[in-house]
Amino acid sequence: MGGERGRSGNCEAGAGRESVGEWVQVIHVRAATAVGQADGEDRNREATCAAPIQVINKGHGESTLAIRPDNVYLIGFKTQAASWFAFKNSYNLISRATALGFDDSYTSLTGKGGYTNLKDIVVGKKSAQEAVATLAKYKKDGSVPEEEIKKALTTFILIICEAVRLVPVRTDVITVWDEAEGGKVGKVACDLTVKWKVISCAFLIFDKTRKWDPIPEAQNVRDFGSPKITTAETAADNIYLILNTKDCKIPK
Figure 1 (tube, one colour):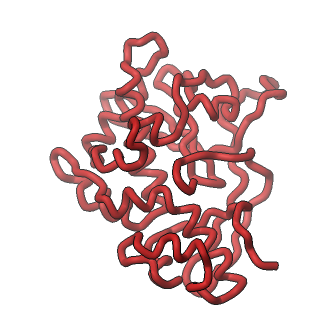
Figure 2 (cartoon, helix red, strand yellow; figure 1 turned 120 degrees about the vertical axis):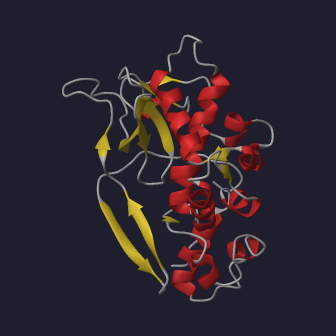
C-alpha cells in the first residue's frame, strides 16, 4: 500500500495476534466467512474470506459490504436485490460477483490525483446514508452513473476501512459525523492512507531491533501523522492496526 492501494494473495485459514512492543498489536486475522457462496456451488472459484458488514438507510435501501479481514480492504458489495459486485481486481474473490469497470486504487476511484483527492470526499452520517442508497439500487445497466458508485465506495472506504486503520482518519470522521452536511478528512489523515504499510513495516522491524531511528521505514514517515511520527510511541498514536505484511525486511 506504499504509494497506492493494492492487494495481494488470498486469505488463509487460521487467525491470531502477537504483541509488538508495549504499544500496539499485530493483527493478522486470516479467516472469516466466504461471501456470496451457496453450498455446493462454485467450489472451483476463488472465494475470499470476507467480513460482511450490513449498512442500512431506513426507507432508502440497504447493502452489504465485503471487507477482507487480513488487510481491511473493501472488495465488493451486495445490492438490495442480492446481486454481488466487486472491484475488477477483486471480483474472483467473491463467488458469483460481477466485476465493476474499475479497480480499487484511489486513482481509479477518485481520478488523477489519487489519494490526494480524498480531501474532497464528504464524510458524515448524511453522506453515508446517500452511499447506502446508491449501493442498494445499483445495476450494471447505466441507471446509476459510474461516478456515483465510485463516490459511494470511496465514502465507505474512508469511514470504515481507513478509519479502522488510522487514528487521524477516525478522529476527523467522528468530528463531522453529526454535522448537517458532514465534513471532510484533513490532509494529515489523507496522507496517512498511503503510509499504513510503511508504518506497519517500521513496527514489525522495531519489534525485533527495539531501535526506531535506524529503520528506513521510520525515516520515511517522520513528517507524517498527528502527532508527527518520530518515535514508536508517536507512531502508535496514529494507527490502530498493523498490517502483517510479508514485504518487510525483518531481521531474523
